[in-house]
Length: 84
Image 1 (cartoon, rainbow, N blue to C red):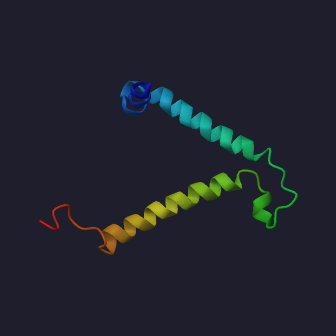
Image 2 (tube, rainbow, N blue to C red):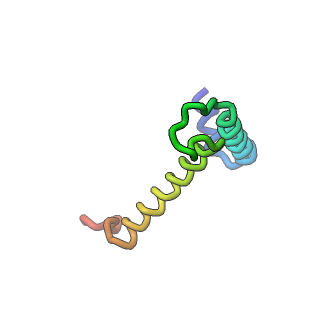
């Protein structure tokens, strides 16, 4: 069973099915956000359907760019053979 899972996520012949599965999961997450009752939302943006998905995606993208900036531009990242 684990071999089939590893083959599914690692093999290029399953790339189309894998991409469709991930897109379907994304659509289901955003669609499920439309079903949430929002009568106790404290802020205006919490009442917007899909806000959680957009906020989470934006936060992840921002985290990636900030870490890349800190690693490459500021100099926190070192060469692979730095300690040799």
